[in-house]
Length: 82
Image (cartoon, helix red, strand yellow):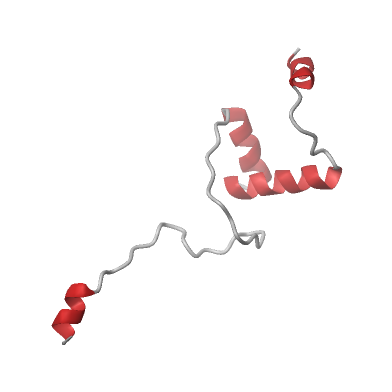
């Protein structure tokens, strides 16, 4: 019986970091992809203390708290780029 059980039982492998709790206690996380420049990456790493995902969540929290959650404006972007 154990031989049959061993043959049909597959060992499940976990992704590195799976099951690790987040530093800020965030739950129900989603995996997303984004295209960013090196400067943005550096800022998010700095805000998150070396943890990119934490930096993104912290930056979003700060924007929510400051009330700065207006949608992207091409006009404002062009003014900043000058």
